[in-house]
Image (tube, rainbow over all chains, first blue to last red; front, side, top):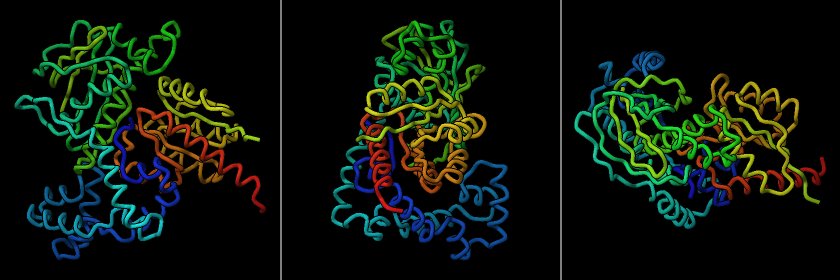
Length: 278
Length: 134
């Protein structure tokens, strides 16, 4: 089973194209596909000066160009919808770019797109109910939906998401605490607090090392790497819906002080998740 | 005769380095020539150990993987560099890596078959380059 991947990667993995074909297709897309700002200017919604102001502000605020332009009063919400619709309708996707460069036959593209959709359908889930008041729900939903399957695959540990409640205190069993920031406008800090039995089992399974060869750093690193895989794949799913997130390095000295506690029923030891939304 | 492939592994996580060492140990004629924990060390070790393939994480403290990729490809265009990322399904991240010259972007968790396929592709390219006239 592969993780979340984009169509170009899928084609390379299947041996249909190689990296140089994808690189050329991406360059073609860069030439053909207009940006939000370019379309807004072309439609007369924004001026070049407005675009420069938005670009300058993006250095200070982590928001997509269109959302930021609306926030700055340079574009109305209705105009942004029109710009996005136009961008989507005229966008050259990577599959078409590869066809136009002769790397894939048009008939073959349809078959490959169907195979790609079938490959990625495993990530179309929505099984966990989130409480009212929890922010950034879409990203959180992806994290919690993917958790059981990645816990099983990476750590060989069965896990079930239990009650989600307002954070009160770090669980008393939380000897190992690791947090991974998913930074962005709809970001979430995702942390695990766990006992040594759970953490060691996760570290052994993910590293393949003998338990006697594990030191304290390696045990925490195993939990951190699991969070990295979980958050990265959740972030990739969110990116498909336009929510851009940057993954930070695991923090092994995380102060868990607010947000939401997610009870986890795990096959080995004890563990809980703590989610802090921005 | 099969050409041996020298691989440099770069990741700030010791767990990931151990995973990749385990996967590569199952592939014939592969030698791990170094382990680096950040982008700066990756550049230095590429200069020193002359790998055929660098497998490198994107998100690392200090000099990140994409910055290191840019430098390595400018200094050693013949070296194949495959990026590794749990966020590889975000098309923009993967696209950036390909534009900078990555030969592949591997997602996490690793698919053992895809890692083996990547190594064999690099081996085939090296063998082809060795027999082609200048």
